[in-house]
Length: 249
Ligand SMILES: [Zn+2]
Image 1 (cartoon, rainbow, N blue to C red):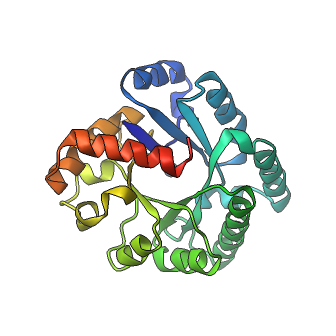
Image 2 (cartoon, helix red, strand yellow):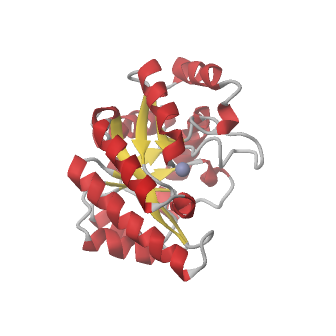
C-alpha cells in the first residue's frame, strides 16, 4: 500500500508523528508527504532522513497559501528546494484554487506562482503534484501550454476533462473522498496504470471532522476494487508499482 499524497508535516501530528509513521510502516510500502509551504520544508526533510526509503518528500506552495508569502520568500524557498533536489521526488502541490481565493489579484499571483512551479519542476526534471479546485479548465490550459509532462492530478473530479487528462498519460490519485460519494465513473474507467492511491491526511478523513492518517489507503484500495469489480490485492499491487515508477523510487 502506498500513499502518494499526505501531509505528515501538518501540525495535527505534532504530538504523535513518530507513532503514526511507525504504525504506517507496519502495513505500507511508502508515503509521499507534500510540503505545501516554505515554513514546513525543514520538518519534511527531517522526516525523509529519519524514515529514509519510507517517507518521501514533495515540495511546493499550495495555491491557498500563496497569498501568505512574498516573491522573495518564494525565490528563497525554491532555491532551497533546488539544493535539496536529491531528497525531493516531486514539485507541488501547486495549481489554482478558485474556491478559497476569489479576488482577481490573488488569482493572478496564484497563476504566476503556478507557472514558476512548473518551470522549477521542468528544471529539476521532477513530476508535478496538481491541486485544482473550481479551476480545472484554467489549470489544464496552463499545464498544456507549458508542456508539462509528468503530472499527478490529486483528487481529480472533472468528468468533462477526464479523457484529456488520460490522453496526456498523466496520473490521477484517488483518496477517501470516494468512500462517501456515489461510485465514480473516473475511478471505474481510469486505466489501472494511471491510477494512484492517496489520503491527503490529516484531511479528508473517512469520518468527516476526524484526523486522517495514511493508513486509510487500505479502505481506499478496497473501495476502488469494489467499484472496478477487481480484487484488492491487484489494486494494491498495481497502485504501489505505479507510485514507485511515477516518483522514480
Ligand atoms: Zn494536499
